[in-house]
Length: 604
Image (cartoon, rainbow, N blue to C red; front, side, top):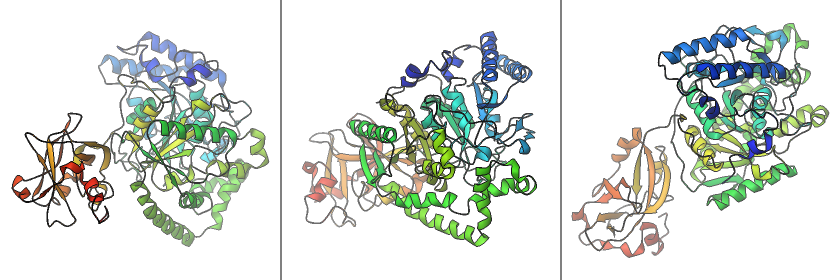
């Protein structure tokens, strides 16, 4: 797998401080906040203040910082559980921090926030310390990071090239090593594109998994609070702190999915790629080669249905959501908006309510069609961005360059999916600012982050929390419920996911049951003369186990099945009395192989 330390090795010259990760900061004071943490926090605050704009739009004052330290010290001494005790962070300046202006990179819009945003409050409750607010494309409208009156941050790894946006300052703050993680927002890719351009992990949760109360909307129905970090496991730990139902957010929808993905994945990749620059092509080819070397399968897919969904975002009425946020400002002070941002938002006036409903109908139809995609692949693997523009590229074509950057990001939130952008260090010699993104269905956040951590070759960091996942029951299937066979839909429609294809321990006999529709086998454990039989182990959500059991007909039943590894799971067995006269097919090695030996096809 990929080298987890490539970024540190190549980029410590940006900020040589050893305090770059969550683990570094937590290691300062394992027993409590302590003087070491307080001293380090004040020093880091001074560092942020020295950087100033265009990265930071507000840096905590010494009094604001000391007030946080005092409050945390008291909580630590009282024995409060504080998993992020003393760990500093910054947030994008469309996310509220109590008592601090939220500008959304528009001075005329600035207002002092009355309370922390939901995600900020969760971090503060976990013991984290906010140090500042970061620059962004105005009103989070853009993927370039250049649409701010406060200036345009550059890529930390490639001066002269854009940082990406709209979460520009949030990404740069982490890439510089100023803080170990930051919060951005992501509507069309703003938590992923800047990650690629700064060599970071960018975790974009399933819409609704993290409450957006206190986040100035871009498109309220699509917005996600995202996380930038150097490591996937640390991004996941931050997600674990901020996720959960938000009773103040009508769009909150917290529905955890599985904790793990199969060891060998089917990765959907674009069958044809739009033109990529050399760096992005190299990064994507490198990732595909790494995937194949790790035993994963690449499945070419027609991405045009996804690109059609993506076009709905800016070529459709969703831009009216942006207009709803700034319409008063547009009417009263139109010149206060960045000209490009104003041009984009003005497009909302061309759409009617009828257009909005028709677009919703088109999206629902597309989403229904694309849900079937997940029957054939486990994740999508795509370039995070097709190219990395220079500042003069954006100046020459601000709308066109921005639109191209969203090629592989715009459709994800519209479809309710999750994603994580990761760097591709093997391409660092030519392009340290190109990366790839793994995309999964909604709810897969915990499993996706765990996979990304393995992909990057990260070693385990003790004490890091993990995002919530649903409780599941491992279930071994041996016959018609195998992948691609007639009853497999009874598993998938209940949210079950394939964990592994393996065999039983050599303690079983397999029989073809007569007169069953569709044809089914019976698995019997024996004291002697047994063999290994091919099975698949599926993780079934516990909440769905009851409805599944109701579908299991006699003489089949669920019992304990011993796998080749020695693990014991629940699985299909057969009552011995039903096997009198049944054909022993153990020699075939499994039900699928037996069916293939017959005249009728496996799907019959």
